[in-house]
Length: 342
Image (cartoon, rainbow, N blue to C red; front, side, top):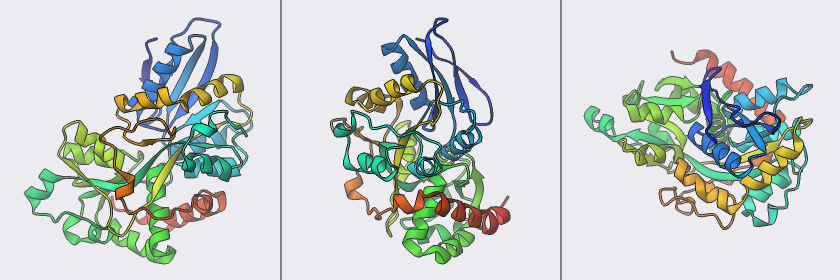
């Protein structure tokens, strides 16, 4: 089935109905890259011709806000992708429904752990490490030193060269915030972020936007999940991917059924289907360089090797909790966002 897409609210993309009248429907929020989202919908509708999908693409923070705003009258059935922290907050807030998929035994431990932490209100669908991608041509032209560590990003020579997303809208940026707090301590992390702000040219809405800007030559470096930087390299842009020397956090991209969904049965069909090995093996064709959650699925040859990256013991339970997440975002708004460089 052909998916027709049209831009709606900033950054959002919706798949318009292309199925026959009377078919069952599924209202889906997708928080991954739009190409991946569209591929998922295309594959699903091809194998489930009796279910049509209305898909809207939103970043993780925007998706959480939409689900929360619609709590009394849900317009969404299923939320797929995006960092796990807002999924966990939605679970803690009672916005998502309990569901133990029969596919759980096929998943990697970190995916199952995400389900257990949430009381089976979410589940892991992929994983990826945090880092950055920098434009090698810009760095060479300007004589900039390759940044290998978080500390290197404070180099005054990088003033105006770095982009990162706003953690209110972006799960990538919230993971960065939570990662730095866990590495440095909260006060020290906010002191670091205040210093980093001097080098930030823009706080974007989308988590992957900073490295796309770097790929286009609009910035020198983007702080992103490493797989998003890899995707730019694979497309031929002069982007090199770095994992910070001090250690870094990672995401467990997640999926959640919405409490009170209008189409819960259709949502469960998609939920079980997308956890399958065959579906996850297709994702690299759409530029997905994350690590898939199904134990038998094969990651792309371009995917970062997590075993070679110094990963912190990221505390998903604490930093995905509603109270902790709200407190960190409020502090960021007060101390960083309110003073952010234009």
